[in-house]
Length: 257
Image 1 (cartoon, one colour):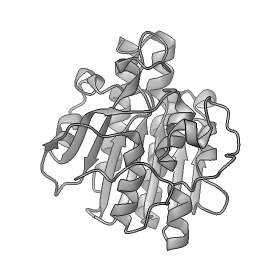
Image 2 (spheres, one colour):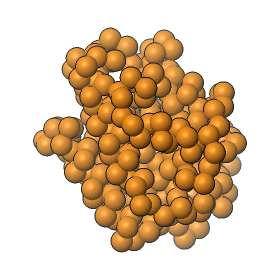
Image 3 (cartoon, helix red, strand yellow):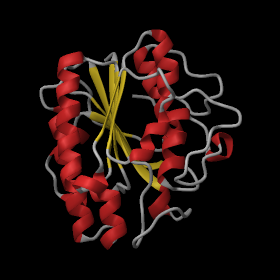
């Protein structure tokens, strides 16, 4: 494995994996090292969590405390800023526009945005997935980030673990299966979430908000269920897989696969 696809399903609680009923969940668990009680950061809000994922530091360090981006006072390099100088080809696919700030200028080879608000997240998810699949097939990039926003929108609309939410998680797993089918075994696929949720909200330090899944999948891997894991560990895991040194400021550690 020498390339990585990171798929983030916004607001996906670990207990929704079994509850959503998509058969590819069990198929992925059978060929992955998985952490089903990993931790995110506080505040458990989308943009701060994503910034911590990409920069492997807490919100206290990167300074993003809400869904409004502000430039870092003491900048930390993110995943793409460390991979680009090493000659790695990076791409972002997303349907929530604030994601654009995760990568700094000239760190990406390709980027595609499909508005979840304009098209509806239920339509934007598969549309974006098809574009990502085509790009992966044609260009064989080293690192791809695919953000799927439907589940978070459904959670806010009708409640976490409700019928609409679980349908959105199931639809997201259909997108994950689309990416993984016929994929080169060069790729490690990491599936995770930024936060969970309770009621119709998130952002607290409640376990329902703070607990996330991290699944590291490749057809050659056996099934390993492990304890621990943090959203801060994802960036170091990606860089280790790609053979690139992490930024000196990063606080996470590579996950043991």
